[in-house]
Amino acid sequence: MSGTDIVDSITASTPSSTNAHDSAVGHERPGFVQPRTYLEPAQPAVPPKQLSPIDREQIEGLRIIRAFLKVRTSYDVLPLSFRLIVFDTSLLVKKSLNILIQNGIVSAPLWDSKTSTFAGLLTTSDYINVIQYYWQNPDALAQVDQFRLNSLREVEKAIGVTPIETVSIHPERPLYEACRKMLESRARRIPLVDNDDETHRAMVVSVVTQYRILKFVAVNVKETQMLRKPLKDLNVGTYSGLQTAHMDTPVMDVIHMLVKKNISSVPILDKDGAVINVFEAVDVITLIKGGVYDDLNLSVGDALLKRNDDFAGIYTCSMYDRLDTIFDTIRRSRVHRLVVIDETSHLKGVLTLSDILEYVLLEGEGDEN
Image 1 (cartoon, rainbow, N blue to C red):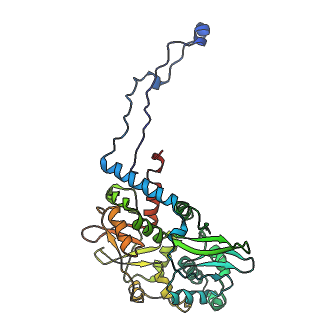
Image 2: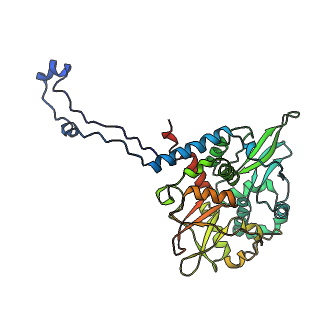
Image 3: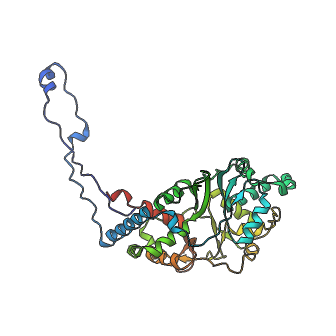
């Protein structure tokens, strides 16, 4: 971790030759051997680690970003005009899927009309869990058309996955608090839930994503330009235990990877190990369009051909890229992750928005005081 590393100066001390008790009764009992550490010479004090100018600049940039997040609210992130689609938990899963596709969205808040309460967030992970469920229980496919959103938690239990914690936040709470809740719950987005002044019941206002928050920072905080340390010198991103696939890999194998490792993408490599594409969790939505869960016996290459024409492509960076340039990319483009490659396009790691958000919020935070 970069930042100010404060090391307490430790000076080993030698015991005094006698103490009051030993003076009084020392002649009545045999002497004893002092612990070895007390007999060793005193160690010199370890000086605090000296920070380079670029280290200090990085720490200051992070401090300013955190201060910005603490004085802005989730309301501030919302666009002037937006559309919100909320699903009742009694809605059929098949219908919810069609609505997502028709409106070009990948998540929606859930509402329990029986209790008039917020019931969580429907995401791509829920549909992937349904695929896993029918893959493990093919006999249940006959009832797929009657499957409703309020049964999703039962699916999670049946396939043994850990449910993502349902969290929400009041839109007037600091944006920093919303970011911390997302990190703690492993969520990539968080619903904003307010109370109606007349009915005093909860109501869903909108949903804020990690991308929208980081873009908000990139547009409004010029001090992101102070984050000039390269990725190779930062503890941010994943660079070991990476899951990969090839164009001829069965798409179900990749879906199993997404569930087992709780990840949102899998880099696709060619026969020489170079990165040529990325299979994303949202790609699953297109594959099961119409509620067809048992027609997934295709390769990754064939699955990627079903992507919409407006697919933005994959974003890459190197270990020598810096967060200031990455924030600039987020400001200009709709980025959800960056694949870290070397000069020959071979995979080195994956940098997600969750990684960036965690670094911005936590790196060197304890040193600010």
